[in-house]
Amino acid sequence: MTRDALCTSPEEQRALERFYYCEARLLDSRQYQQWLALVSEDISYCVPSRINQQVDNRQRGTEEMISVERELQGSDSMGCPIREESYVHLMLRAQRAYKINSWSENPPARTRRIVGNVELMARVGEELSVISNFTLYYARPGSDSFVYSGQRRDVLRAAGDSYTLCRREVILDYADIEYPTLGLLF
Amino acid sequence: MRYSISELVNADASLISRRCWTDPEVYALEKRAIFGRAWLFLGHDSQIENPGDFVQAFMCETPIILARGQDGEVHANINSCSHRGLPVCRADHGNTKRFVCPYHNWSYTVEGALTSIPQEGALCRQPDKSQLGLKPVPRLESWRGLIFGSFDPDIISLEDYLGDMRFYLDAFIDRFPQGIQFMGAPHRWLLDANWKLPVENQLGDVNHGAFLHSSIIPREAQDMIEERGYSVVTAPGHGATFRLMPADAPVDEVAWGMEGMGGLFGGAEVQDYLREIQARASERVGPLRAQMKGLTYGIYPNLSFLWSNASFKVSHPRGPGKVEYWSWAVVPADAPDAIKQVLRTNYSSFFGPGGLLEQEDAEVWVQQFRGSNIDFADDRPYFYGLGLNEEKPHAQLPGLVSVTANEFYARHFFARWRDELIALEKQA
Image (cartoon, rainbow over all chains, first blue to last red; front, side):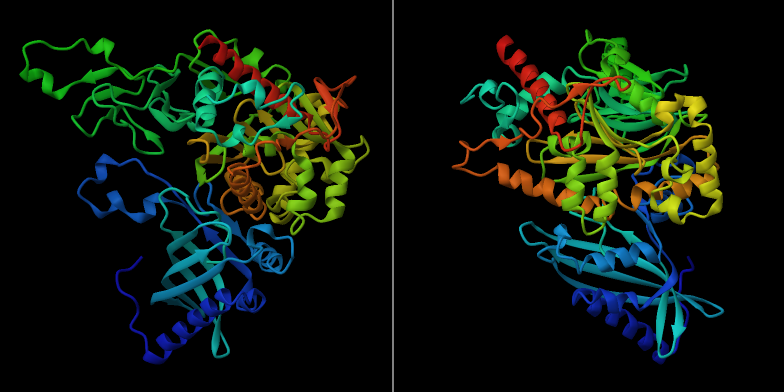
């Protein structure tokens, strides 16, 4: 990834943030059907797994030695990502929430997302590569409360005065998976 | 202890005390009576193909390094330095010549021998390094690439231990010309639950699907599973559930992998590959097992296998109320990489920490521990009596066989569990 974000206009930055704030509000308000309408039907949605990688002696003294990328097993790897999903998966997740027998979310968890550090990293034709950070507070009834944090690496396409989500990679900051689920809509 | 183990599980194991799940003293006994004596799953050959390859594993709470030595053989040692006990291996997997303790740089070969003590040069007398290697796991054997270890030097052979489960495991593993491959590091999920409930769930509990998972599994699909479903116990604690499909069933309804998300949506190349595997299944595993469409398997005490959702799982105890639940995606070893990448989603779509189905299972496992850890209800043991004594031998299927609603798989597990704990109790 390049070091600097693109120099973008205040209007474009504002439009991107407006999209992400809207998305966060819909998810925290459990309006998953409205959220799904922001998603392209050809979406690829991946949560790489994050492993404890062996130090490569040849990389001593370089940033590569401890790079985050070395810890990720994503779609292109021959490891196993936590999630590799299409629109069908996200639709099943959204629909499931409105069934009375989706027991892990009945009663529903209370969530609050704070999204920030929105940076437009690249523009290729119609597609915008945007990264953002999030923290997600998650309180499940009859259980404990959890804080998720991570980075989202998105590809957005302009759609009217908003955007469509075409690709999302969620880099979660867990060391050991001590959450009741990583199946949330991050 | 305030009670004897025989009070926790009744004679026919149809009544199970809540304390089996929650009592720290029971857990202390389990460690010695079960995990100190059984064959425990460590890993698969495909994870350590080359000399120097290693992966981390656990035997109950004891950390293990599983490695391919420079001699080409598999080695398993306790991941704890002979000097001060630190783990000498900190990566999930990799390839190395030496494991080095961070504290004083004691170094060990991949086979576990101690090669250097940096401080010793400054001293008059050098310790005998041949006595100070990592502690090896006393018994290590593998079958079809599945590697197991045991702390009991006198345990029966792994093949005898697996017994007739080999018949059912081979229905899957032998279906593929080069067997199976584990993909990447396991997903390691820490849950506030007792280790036995995930095991019981995968050992034979097919019938919770209609209820717990009804937000995802349609009733008609579950009816089909139960209609064609068999539950088998080959030996107490080992079990398999599967469907036997009619000989004239269309190939797409029988073939492994077709009913997962990868098989359904992965494209023609993937589906053609799966059909090709099924076309040769009869020749590879015989006509009966070619028509098998598995559901869940369990190997005593804590290994599980999911057929359609293509996963091996180990339930590692971390105390009575905590489990570290490991899952790997498994794929046919001969498949092209692009097909493996699709087929691994047969696992991750529904199972693992991000899976659509298993989030429901994890919730009930945690709530079951909470429900077991309450007061004033010890006079109400759990009812495990569904289908009592309804299981029977079968002409073609090894083991005791019944419908999936029969909870005999759990009764057999707990009868073995009880007897093994009592045997240790008597020795004490």
